[in-house]
Every structure is written in C-alpha cells, then in structure tokens.
Amino acid sequence: MALLEKTDTLTVSYESIDNDHEKFINLLNALDTANNADFPVLYRQLYEHTERHFERENQLMGEYAYPGITDHKGEHQRVLGKFKQFKSRVDKGLITFGRSFVKDRLPQWLTLHVTTMDNALAMHINKQPNV
Ligand SMILES: [Fe+2]
Ligand SMILES: [Fe+2]
Image (tube, rainbow, N blue to C red; front, side, top):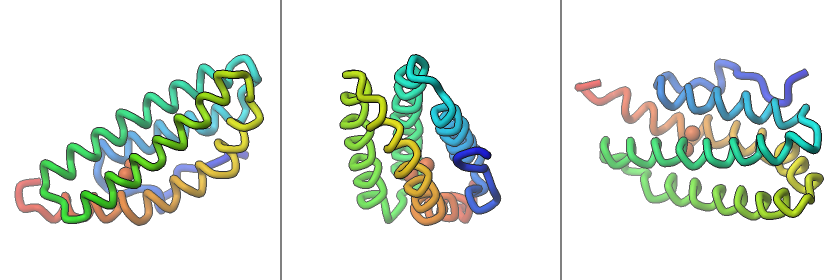
C-alpha cells in the first residue's frame, strides 16, 4: 500500500498546484520503498521539488493579491526549514531520521496543508473573473 494516495480530497482544482502535489506524493511513495542507497538521492529530489512548488505558489499569491499570503508563505518557509534540517542528517548518513520525517510527518503535513491553505488559495484564484 502506498504511503499516501492521491485522492479527491487532495485535489484543489487548479492544475499547476495539483500537478506539484501529485509529484510530491509520487516522490514520497518512492522514498517510502527506497533502499538506503537511493534514499538520499530521492530526498534531494523531493527537497528541490518542494522549493520550486512553494515558489510557484508564493508567486501565484502575489499575482492574485491573495489576502492570506503572509501566513501561507510563512508556513512554506517553516516547512522548508524542517526539510533542510532533515536533509543535513540524511547527508550525514542518518537515513533513519529521514525515513521518520517522510513516513511519520510529511503525509500528515501535506494532507493538512493542501486541504486548508492550498485549497483556500486555489479557491481565491478560481473565483477571479479572468481565470
Ligand atoms: Fe502546495
Ligand atoms: Fe502551499
């Protein structure tokens, strides 16, 4: 069974955001079954993808004058900090720490973030007249 399934609950109905989330979920599931040699490589991919994913959302928030921009950007910043913290452990060979982050924290975090903050952002964009 996959660590996290892409369900309707995790869909916000805005294509570029949904595509980023799908990629995130795929990498998370790949990390869950990766061996210790592949884990750091995939972890780096997830980290770099997450930087770009957050940057794309941050840009959309600016573009569409999203009122919740400060909190949402702040949450992205906070989570990237966690990613970085675990990346330095993984890079030192402490794979178990990375596995625990991937398995015990990221699925819950993504589910909550997508269903609250990202969903609110997508709703804001989708109700603009020029979309
Ligand atoms: Fe997102
Ligand atoms: Fe977000």
